[in-house]
Length: 322
Ligand SMILES: C[S@@+](CC[C@H](N)C(=O)[O-])C[C@H]1O[C@@H](n2cnc3c(N)ncnc32)[C@H](O)[C@@H]1O
Image (cartoon, rainbow, N blue to C red; front, top):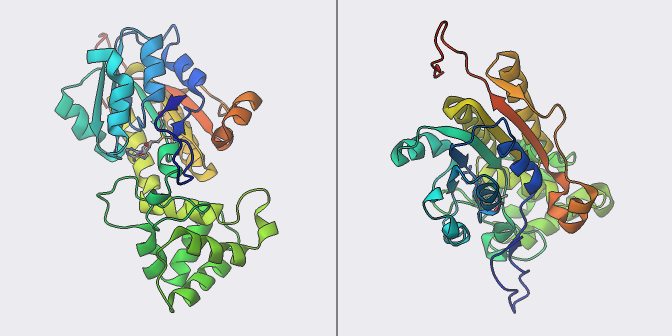
């Protein structure tokens, strides 16, 4: 667990981020047949929890940790400072990893980690606007330089587009009813705050319909994914992993959403069939009952891992990029 702030008197929850499936991540990068020296790219470094665990377990590996959120970077830097030259932290998006690696002069990439979604630091701070449980501006940008906020989407998209978003990116089966309620209400005044939106969504979905989760969970997830273009970022991150990883290099992806896990699964199945990766996890790894109890946010996590396979030139041991 990495502690990143004290409990605040205004009731904001304690700011801790607990790295999900950390033993499993370490086991992939530290496995006896994994490359021993080179760089691990952690494209979603957050506060550096996974990165620190991997650096502790693998003394000859180095980590380039990247995150789009400028607020987490000083925390990652502080948490990784004890590794000195073995850890570098840069601000950027997963979709910018090619440029960042070139800029850092890094060539030998032996591991690639994507721990998708938002961190507790983001989710628990009401002013970041992710929460349906405590009031904040309807924002949800992990990268504050992005132009479009959740409020922009809610207040400007047409009803059909909102319904499709809630259905496809959140799995909300009452998406049409929710979109209709939003469009009716925003005629009076645009949505600005998370609780106002959560209230409308809850009434449209109905308390019982969402089971044991908050009725606004799915709509908020869909909005977060759209604001941060999470689907596109994931695909770009997987393609870049294929370009950069050396033969035998390891790819690990942790996702928190069935649609997202489906994208990873399809990418790896095709890459495995085409000989570019060999899948290590036939079924995704899930948190143990113990982990799920200790860290409820881990409950929806799925980890998939694969080994990069690069064809060798006939009669030569040289690796071929491609
Ligand atoms: C679940 S947290 C990662 C936690 C980290 N693995 C740890 O153990 O501390 C996800 C982090 O990824 C970042 N993130 C999500 N999508 C990103 C993207 N496309 N590009 C860069 N950072 C991203 C978020 O800002 C957040 O800090």
